[in-house]
Length: 206
Image 1: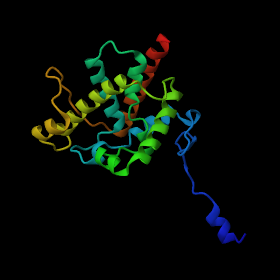
Image 2: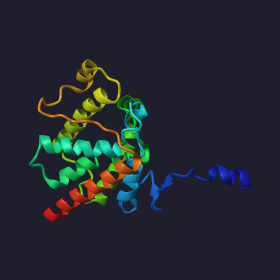
Image 3: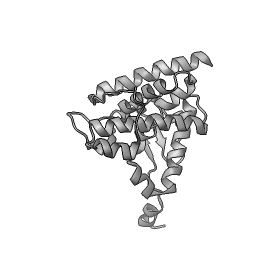
Image 4: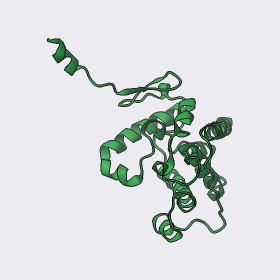
C-alpha cells in the first residue's frame, strides 16, 4: 500500500491526554482513566453561559456544581449521600466536552447525547455510583440545576427578572443565592474540597 494511502487509513485520534497524564478514550471512556483532579481542573476552566457573564471572572462549571449541591441540600435535606455526590458530579462530563448551552445540545441531536451518556456512566462507575441515576434522583438534581440557572441568569448573565421566570421558573421564596464568580484556582479548590467531603460521607455510609 502506498504511504499516502496508509496515512489515509489511519483512524483519527479519539483520545485526550489529561493533565494527570491519563489518556481518556473519548469513544469508549473507561472509569480507570477518570481522575477527580482532571475533572476539577477542567470544570474550573469551563465557563457557564459561554462566558457571556458580568464580572472579572467567568462563572465556572466547578463553582456551579457546588452551588447546585447547596441548593439540593436545601430542597432535600435527607437525601442519601450517594445522590449528593451525583449532584456534585452532574456536569462532570463537561471537563471533556465543555459546557454547551441547551439549544446547541438539541441541535446536535442523539449522537451527542449518547456520547455524553457514555462519559457520564464512566465517571459514575469511577466513584461508586450507578451508571444511570434513578429518574426521581435526576429530577431532583435537575430542579436544583434549574434554580441555580435562574440565579445565574438574573445576577450575572444579563437576563431580566421576567425572562428568567419564563425560562427557569420561580425559585422557592425562602431561597437566596448570591452568585460570585471566583478565580480559576479558587473554584478548582472549592470543587475538590467539596468532593472530598461528600465522598467521605458517602463512603462512610456504605
